[in-house]
Length: 186
Image (cartoon, rainbow, N blue to C red; front, side, top):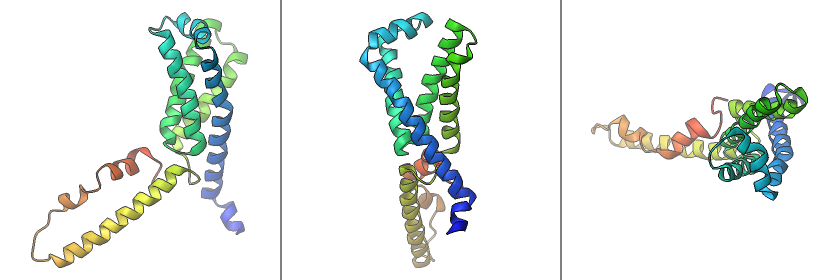
């Protein structure tokens, strides 16, 4: 029991869970504040940057903070949610630098959000996430397919079956497992 708690993987996964949930929880209210008075947010933050469609971009910022925060909290499509937050916070950092210069009191919270979301995007959600559950299901399906392929190969020893035909059957599930959902190298 103690060795399980003290292992690197358990500690890393617990740290990622805490980082994801806390970051998502404290960031989500910023998105709701934007939605409460979207016109005011557009006037104060988007229009000074001379970006086109300020109301639309204000909604994009609000929904990326709300949606990205929920994705972090749940651990579902975590990297996508973290990247949405990174994008929004990057624009906020740029706005702070353009309007106020290097004001550490204004930048410190933005930089902490940026660092948290970037870390989550780079490392993945950890084992305590819905992404990990999905990956485990996909792995078990992949294992089942491998067993079926072995049985087919044994039954058809006199027929030549292309290995490319067998490996392409995974399609979208293998792509999601390999690229989007989580770090599968653990």
